[in-house]
Image (tube, rainbow, N blue to C red; front, side, top):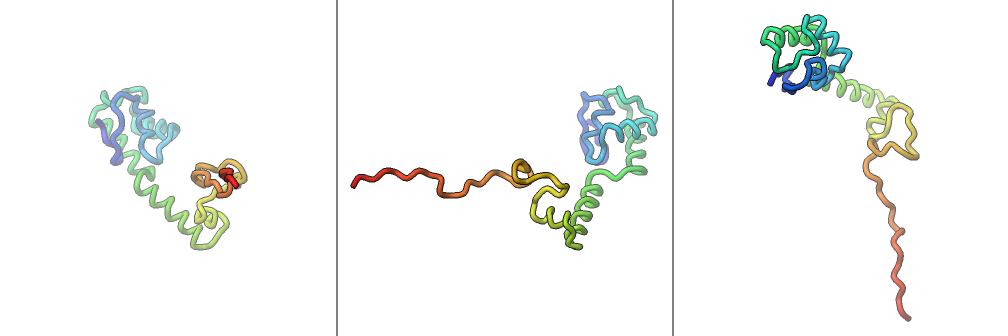
Amino acid sequence: MARISGVTIPNEKQIKFALCYVYGIGQKTSTDILSKAKVDGTVRVKNLTDDEISRIQDVINERHIVEGELHRVVTSNIKRLKDIKSYRGDRHARNLPARGQRTKTNARTKRGRKVTVGGTAKKAVSKT
């Protein structure tokens, strides 16, 4: 198992797809990293040499923000929006969509599970 930027990447996958397991690296960035490190993207992770892995790690360290540092940057950006009381910051604080999506229907992922309001249960008929 190879570890890149603190993430264990799967052995059986090609390196261009396995790099996407690192937070902050997508397929395009993965391809760019491999071309700069001069590594073939179709090679399986288990077949990489230590030299190739270290070259990939060096390119990531010098050119990209990934994993914990990227999480901190994103969190600080959201905190800044909340502190200046912007509209987007308010939406983040209320746990609602921040980019103009509708909320009358949909938005279940952001708002959470549907909560049924009381008064919908049928009353049992009583004998008189």
